[in-house]
Image 1: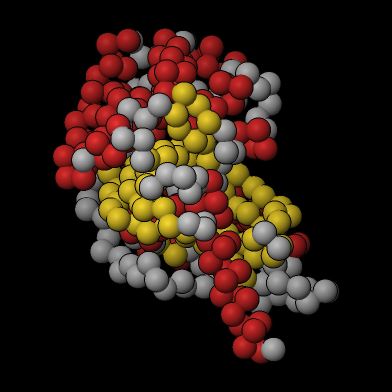
Image 2: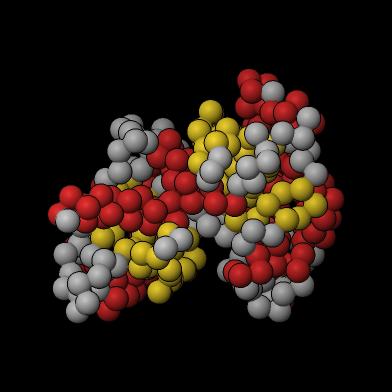
Length: 350
């Protein structure tokens, strides 16, 4: 795979793609699209006293990064699946009268040689302007979306985001009330899609799963060596927060949900021992057994094994007793940014 594109990043600067739409009430309507290596996600919201209120959403597994590691390009099938999902997003935004939208793409588009062709095809087919963001901006948005879950009794927050093509680690100082300062971050070039393709996770042996965990632990070790997070965790100064499909899936299984319920999952605390136990149990299941799990299904049955291996490696490297689950991230961070910009504009006009 080629090196990721050199994409300029300024975490202090929020770029907006303004879609002018006529809305009957004149009220601003905000939308955020997060196009990852595996998923296409949309949130549409209106401003509220405590931030925003979601009025519509959409999520679909598109596997945009399928085969990217081997070929360096997006495949035609992957691009077609993704554009079909983005057409649904565009239709939802039109129906809701969206006035402010930001649409970002992450690791897969940073690596793909044919990313410019893909972005142009998306624009022509859907009218959506895809912005390929840097890993630094991805980290900023991820932690911005999770900050409301931080406990100001802790001095630090450690957020991990297990994506399809990359895994972000973000180390930040908590500055109450409800803010944080990013101290260090890194984007590691592996995620559930890339690890699944490397190990063929449809049915893995215990030995293969242990190899996956060990491989990820080696890649995490330099971050720990540089910043010595374990010493802060041992002193009880750190809150750990996990955000990704893997994390929310394991949380749903932990709760025994027969149908995924975001209200029960978002903000949940899980003990480290339960995480590792569920991860090992999922890894020993057959593919069909994982498909039958209500919170997994056919589309995630192979990916969840790779995700569990990454999460277990993180849990082994940084032995935090409890981890908080966040069913939020980039989209929420983008919505908050858009609302801040719109609020400033409204005040200027007033």
